[in-house]
Structures are given as structure tokens and as C-alpha cells.
Image (tube, rainbow, N blue to C red; front, side):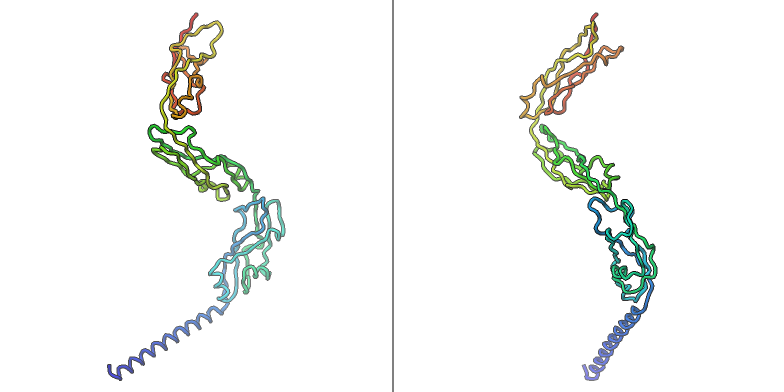
Amino acid sequence: MSSRKKKNFSFKKSNVKTFVFFLVFTSLLWLFIQFSKNYTKEVEVGIRYTNLPSDKIFNEDSDRTLRMTLNGNGFRLLNHDWKKPLLDFNVEDAVFNNEDQYFFYVDKESSILKSKLDFKGRVLAIQKDTVKLKLDANLEKKVPVMIEEDIQYAIGYGSDKGLVVTPDSVFVSGPSQIIDTIQSVGTESLNLEGLNLDYKAKLNINAEKLPSAITVMPQKVDAHIIVSKFTEGSQKIPITLNNVPEGIQIKIFPKEISVVYRVGLDRYNEINERDFRIVADYAKASEESSFLTLELTDRPASIHDVRLQEKQVQFVVLK
């Protein structure tokens, strides 16, 4: 490259640097001048309450924001654009309280207000000069845990106790008017198929179905299923006839019925006919029918899928 071309290139490069420097400098100077000017702007200020009584809880009807008109230079107002201003109100500083309502006076001329806002300009106007805090009684009660379950055991398997939840109840706390409506809490659903081994897991309380003001403790429960091999058993049980009027003799056919059930192998030999009671109630007999309906009134807690081989027996009235 010739020396003349090098000089031209060097000159052009120097001009570009000078241009960029002055462009940046003048832009910064313009911004400084603009932000040094005074502006008036309406802002939304957040409200936070402190030192709430331990037996009370925040009510959503309380004032949570306050609109203000501020006047100041651009630098001061820019700070409030980057983050939402926040006003703290101490419950102990309330100018008036009525039962569970607390009121705070907001003076736009107060230096304390500007200090809380961290603003050195002027507060021209505020939405209202009184802020209200409403509290509710914080009530706690114990409610049962309900689980939405669909448990399918593998063929030949079952469980004596089924699904056991620990703890079976939890504590809910929150506003008294909401707590009074809560009778139970649910968990995430539990779906199991082909279960042939003991199962243990932690289930989360389903807080999404509860109002946001409600807290639950604990937030998880233990779910446990003891699985064992099952077999089918049966017993022949004599039928007990109830409510037969004096002077009337009733004959039933048959006199005993087989009860079929499923039971764990480890408890198979514990079951006997004395654990069952089948009743035919003559008081429920129909004049148009010669049959009595059977009812299984007693049975062991450890058996499952119980069924009577016959649901009715025929009867005859003897004169």
C-alpha cells in the first residue's frame, strides 16, 4: 500500500473515533440535562404491615397499595421506576383501631413519609390520607386426611388393613370464617396397579384446593400398604330368624348358607363359623312373597370381597 493511501486511511479512522466520542459525550450530556429537570409522575406504592399480633392473620380486604403523585428530578423518579416503592406500617403506630381494624394516617407533607419512600422530591398528592389494615382471628383445628386412591392388587394378593395413612389428620390454620368450612383435606391421588409387594411413600397435601389464606401442617403424610398372599375361603353359617311373632312357627329352606371370602394366607386358619352371623328378618317379609332377604350382620375384619351364595331363603308359616 502506498504511503499516501496509508495516510488517508489513518485520517479516516481518526475521524470516526472523534465522531463516536463526541456522539457519546453529547448523548450523555443530553441525558444528564433531561434527568436534571423536574417531572411530575403518578406512582403506585406497595404497603407492608409489621408486628401483627400472633393470634391474628392478614385479611385480603386491607389496603395493599396507595397511589401518589410525585414531583422531582428525573434521577429521583427513575429509582422508583426500577423498583416499586414500599411503605411499612407498624401495627403499634396505628392512630386508631376498632376490634380487628387498624387505621394509619398518611401525611403527604411529612418528612417521615419521604424517608419511608426514600424520595427527596415533593409529594404533591396521595390517593387517600388514611390506610386501613384488617385482621382476622387465626383459628387452628384438626381435620382428617382423605386420599383419592385406586389400588389394584395382583392376582392372589391383597391387604388386611389396606392403605394406612400416618398421620391420619393434620392441622389447618387461617381465618376463622374459612376454617369453619373445612371438614377434611385431600392429598395427591394414589394409583397403583398389579401390587404384590409392600408399598410405602410420602404424599403431598393438595393445597391447591384450599384457599390461599390457609396453611396446613404437616404438608406431607406417609402412605403404607402391607401386601400379603390371599386365598379364597368359605364357611357354612346357620341362619338366624328374627322378629317372629308369638304363636307362629316359621320354617326356612335352606337353614344355612355358605359365605365366600378372600383372606390372607397367614390368617386363613383363624376364621371360623362363629365369626359370622346371617339374619333373616321376618318383620321385613312381604305378603306377596314367600322369601326372606338375608343380611350378613357380623364378619371378621380381616376378610375381603365377602359374598353370600344365596341372598334369599324360602319360608313357610306353620299354623
